Image (tube, rainbow, N blue to C red; front, side, top):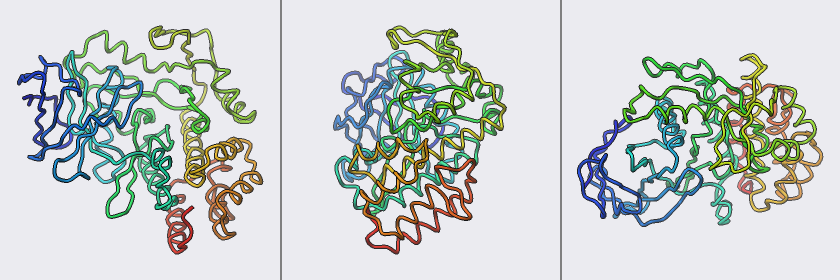
Amino acid sequence: MITRSTNNYYNNEDIIIINKAIAKDDISASDISIENITNIVINGSNYINNFNIIGKGSYGKIYKFTNTINKNDSYVIKEYIDKIDYVKDKLISMILYNINRNHNINLNIIKSYWNDHNMITIMDGYSGDLYNLIYREKFLYYNPIDIFLQISKSISTLYSNEVYYCDLKLSNILFNIKNNDIECILGDIGGIYFKKNCKFTNIFADKTLEGNFIMLKPLRNVQNYCLVGISLEIDTDYSNIGYAQVSDELIKIVNMTTIFKVLSIENNVTTILSESGNKFILDKLCINLDHAVFTFPHKLNSAGIINFQPKMKDKEIDHILVNNIFQSLGVFLLELLFNSDFNLRHEVINELFDKSKAKILHHIGYKARLTQYKKDILINILFGGNKTNGLINSEYVDYPSFINQLESINKQVLLLEDYIV
């Protein structure tokens, strides 16, 4: 039975891990791979590991532990492969906890365990993600505008605290079902970045978080392309923030995360973005392809590392980040509306940078079969009206005004029984 853990930053749950392979009290001397954990006990309730992998990626695996009495009550345990991902997730979670006290934005980390053998975190449970919900064709029961409003509020709350969520896509939106209502939260907090000198950069006594670089994140697919990846990355020394076992080598590796890997500038930018979108990026960034400072051969194979040097002022950076987030919200809304036809959805998304309103409206009318009134609502969100800015064509969008507009729209939508797409 293992009872020792790292500092508990969030809750005071009484957590016991039952390990079928090794029963030692000192976690630092034990290998507690998730595959060896049969169950966990939190506040006297027993949660069974049914070995259901609900998430898998380059970071590792996520397992679901279900309450033996109430199947809707669960926790998840994330097992990390890379120390970089572990440290970054833990650090960002510690910061977001200050925001989450009043807003349920992302999953809370309940406890974490870290030693030479183990890197795992216990987090709040969730039912699934929107991508798989749509894939299972159960999405029709829920109002897409309501979901859109929930996510917009979360992003707005982060932004008001000078924090940016830069990886918005269906698979990163997690949900729980309560009383037949869907509650959505942001997943993958590794896509969260902090404005330089924001109020959370002094959260630790002697250390600060600063975004010292402007990065072009790897662009994985079309649905994520409009983020264009201009974001602020964390660059910090992790040695004095509660990780006594962090080695100098690890600190150096973690600091290397300020240099993002990009497989190919041609494949990842110019062929995905439209001409105007590509010009938008290249006009703002000075790209030095020869400045490959760090390499990770075991991860990148033949790929290189590209360092992007900023030539913008802080106000310009903030302006661009806001525009990118809003354009990604526009894509997210279209993804919700065109949930059952991914090919058609990509056709629509491909028009966004060129702002081809006529083509987008044609697809909206064809696929969603909206009445003119409903179409007007959507037009207002995407392109704006006489007194409002839209997500797609605006140079700058005011978050509070936009959220108020969405709330008003949502009230109207809820009156329409046949609105659900």
